[in-house]
Image (cartoon, rainbow, N blue to C red; front, side, top):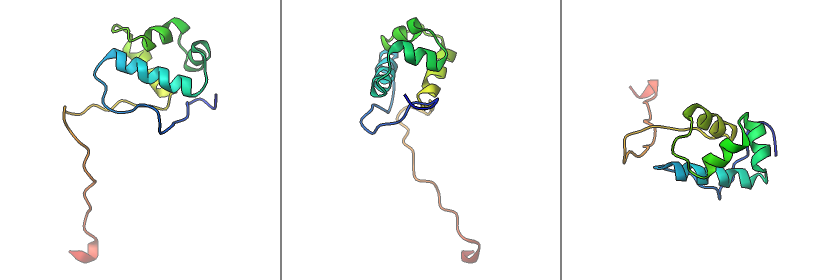
Length: 99
């Protein structure tokens, strides 16, 4: 394992999440990509091994603050937007000379 945040890999799952099970699969895939055991990963993230196990198994009643802590440890973040919303390209502001 490297540093305090887990590395990123283009083959790992990302995208819309709609269930605790999907969060669990995402966490498991990222942990395994780092070849970390649940115990090693729990220690790195400051949570218990049981918490990581429950999270990876999609337990629906997980403590949100700890889930966010684990995601941050993986170098991931959560973004909230309206359902069906797609990020558009940033608006280009005109140069001062073009006005």
